[in-house]
Length: 239
Image (cartoon, rainbow, N blue to C red; front, side, top):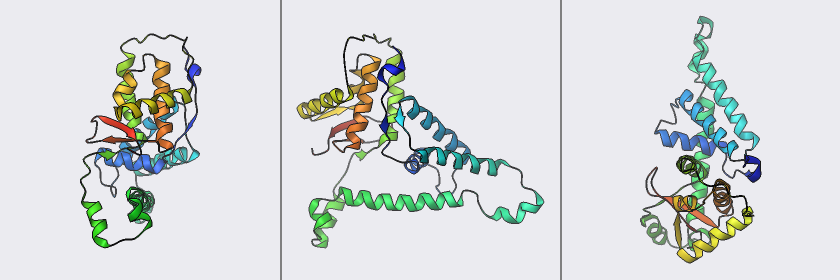
């Protein structure tokens, strides 16, 4: 079966700065001292991985890739005597400033999104808000990049099992979306691994992953993880 048999385009709903912040957090590096060569290399790997899944990348991803490559080249070039005075300016400075502004904006937006209807739309007494903030949250909500990384690991493992390719099942992305929603309504929660390992063949594997991304984009489901590389749990957004 060729890749074209299940070629589907899906818009990415998290941007290039989200990916950059994810890589900085994943590598546990200082945002003020980004190891640009390492981050650029990993960034390009994610771009290639998402392209291989037929995810429709916005032009901003490629613009940031060019920016990272340019910064990397500037940092690798030897400094001439004439340029020594200008070297006080870190070539990463503008990018760091942009990341910090975006990070602050996104954290504020996420804070509003996670508040209850009362806390978000009706400003009650202060102690009510404090009670919400102090509630324990053992699981951390994750996004597309954690799922892409998990999918790559699982698909490599599944690929080694020589899954049978049976091209008699006529499937659409909407069919797979409905199947996942129905299963979540019955069981309440599913793991990312269970959903993918039950695929049975590579066509269904790809459709399952794309269906999960589309459901997350529509905010019908949410994905959570307690620790990095731990079990990813998926549930309906309203549960």
